[in-house]
Structures are given as structure tokens and as C-alpha cells.
Length: 83
Image 1 (cartoon, rainbow, N blue to C red):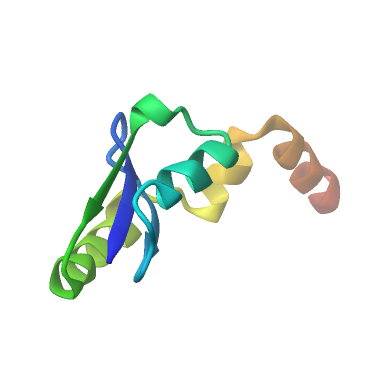
Image 2 (cartoon, rainbow, N blue to C red):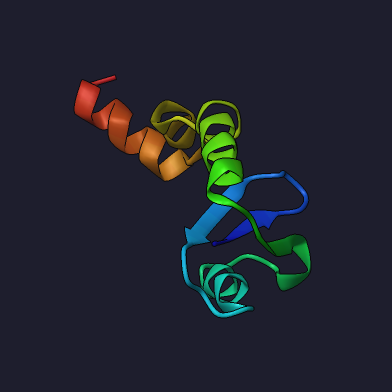
């Protein structure tokens, strides 16, 4: 299995169980990430289990953090709440 992470943040971006080398990096580039800031590597299922538990808790923005960080989304939320 292969994973792709962002070097600058350590953020886990994607996993594929049977990907061709370079596929995950290309997917991340297509999503707007800089290729030089990406790392793709082969890991075991056990390593992925450990990584997915760690990143799910520590390195992923919550929905609230995403809304607060995006002025457009924050404005939509304020309008919906009438504030």
C-alpha cells in the first residue's frame, strides 16, 4: 500500500492499496498541492493503521476550524445564525 503525505505539515493526504508509483503525488498535485512538498511511500497495513489513528486525531482540521479559517464560510455561518 502507498501513502502520500505533505512534507511541510506531516499531513496524511491519501492512501491506495494498489497504486502505481507517482499516482498519489499526481492526485495531490491535481488537488492543488506543490509536488516538491509531497512524499509518497510504501507502508504495511500495520503502519497505516498507526498512521491513520494518529493523523485523524492530531493533524486534521476540524470542521469548525475549517469554517473559521475561511472568511466566506464564516460569513455563511454568521448569516445562517443571524449574527
